[in-house]
Figure (tube, rainbow, N blue to C red):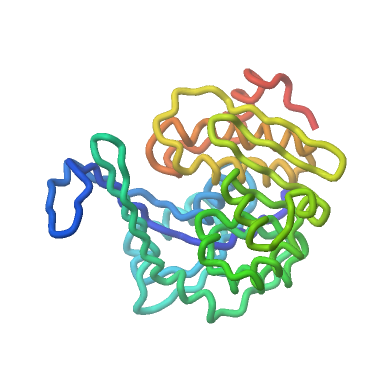
Length: 297
């Protein structure tokens, strides 16, 4: 029977705008088109786990428009446990506004909305938790209570203070970060990467199109990407983590977990929208075995 994976962090709505040009001060340009997608790092991971057939629980703060946007019904239809959501009256769901011009330059604005209130809430005690991008003090308090901690600071790392970051790392069993984030974590804590490896059982560092590297106490594993026609890399990391964590709780070795994560990520990048094309376990397994051979525990 699958272990429940609790995921902490943002539940957001992504608004993606195609524009003629990125505006400077006192300028105005036409919007060519725009699209609205369900997103947020924590919700992306929860949806990925649920779509793969795993058990997941979302711990997030949402506003009044969570229900009216259709997001609540959508998550419930997938079987995501919403019993630990913090519903904040008078607040809005977290939103990301991303403007992209014809030369693929981007300008992004992020409205924390209800997520900013997480610092005022007392986290629940959970068995197996993944701390996605979120308010740092809430993540730190969650880490101290949880039985097993997976941590991904993501783009919110710039909002972390050293004390909360070190508290989280003290309790972290699996750390996920890209090449830039891992460097920043080392700088913020005055540790070398070797020192970081000594205190954390598993560190997964992603390198975009170059794949990922998994570091354990006694080995490291290079995990290649699964080659597909990539349309948008946004959400690939969340999809990777969803696949990795579900495989890990199902007892697969870490190298296989990484390959499963890479396979799930390959579906996410084929379309625009982080949750638009996430695979079932059967879909993942078919593509996995095409590229990596028989999936075995």
